[in-house]
Image (tube, rainbow, N blue to C red; front, side):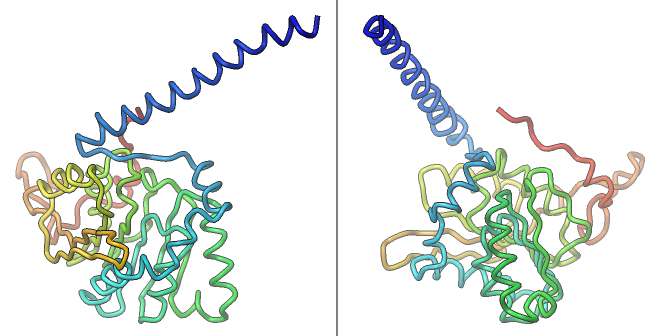
Length: 266
């Protein structure tokens, strides 16, 4: 009887394995060959992010290999404004914050989907007395595709995080409305075959104020851009009779932005 049950269960287990890997392959083909080629991103569920941080998958971000791109992003952020207010979208466990806190900041707000990452950066900040107070730092566990800040910022950073958005351009356009007058977006992407479609879509709606291509000793390449939305692409906040655009690119009210909907999930 046991042998018969074993004989029946083996094909069933094989079917489950085949079904699992078919789903994995199908998702990879869909995001990689179809949506990736069209300039869309590769989102991950929160549970996967938490697991990766818990197992040390992202620990290398604090190493020297990532330092070149981090320094360029940091330099752009503090160059354009004196003591800027900074929104770090996809802040991870706070590697960039650890560098930014050495400079005068009006405020720092880090946002990340991973609860584990946010818990780590809070522990590190609390371990250094006065850091949170000096940099006016706050950290929020949230999905940045639906997160709505309560204020506007001088600098909004997407350091290697845009590719994990369902629709990177939609996310950029939404967060551009949270820029203070004269504010900038600093975005970086590590080289891969799918970053070019993302940049291509972005460059249709944003102008590049500054750019740098950064390579480390291992040959990894990053593209870093300081972006400003084209004036003609700004959201209209005036009446339909005049068709005017709000001055200084301020965009719609924060309350209206908070009610905006993220793109449909696929």
